[in-house]
Length: 213
Image (cartoon, rainbow, N blue to C red):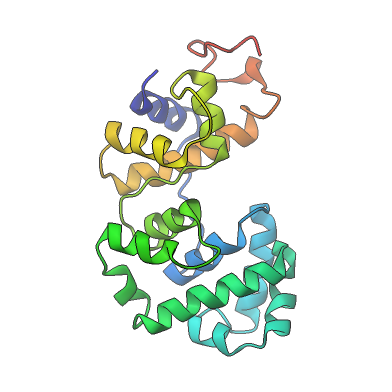
């Protein structure tokens, strides 16, 4: 199976996922940081808390005392680390003249700038670039590695940049496909291709070389 075929099969089975659920690009940025090591439902609770307090903009978050911010984002877990990371990325946005100005940077430069922020790794950076800045970079996660290795698309250990390059080589510079594909892979891994896979229900069982797992 090739990457494009997998995308088309998953899209046909699950339909469009229309991910990322957010009202503004900055909300995507916040969600990308808060979703680290936690379920999305917990992120939604934290974001609702920020909205309720009128704090969903970088300037307001920077002015909010750490102890207050920690309580608001507590549902997302790791609230000490995530408070620091939120403030770092908000400072970057403000120092760069706002989100629009930051996102006007060329893709590679934008990625480098985001990765320079302590606590922002490749997955978080690419999520921000793809879903908030609408620039064509594919987001890889552990679900991607699990699905790809079971289907024989990828062989070997988890390699973020290697898997990203594979997808972007076979599906070049397509923002809409990258968004859907990432969401579809995650949906498939959560629903069927779990750690203990539900192979009898899998829409890919006819071509999966590891269907006996």
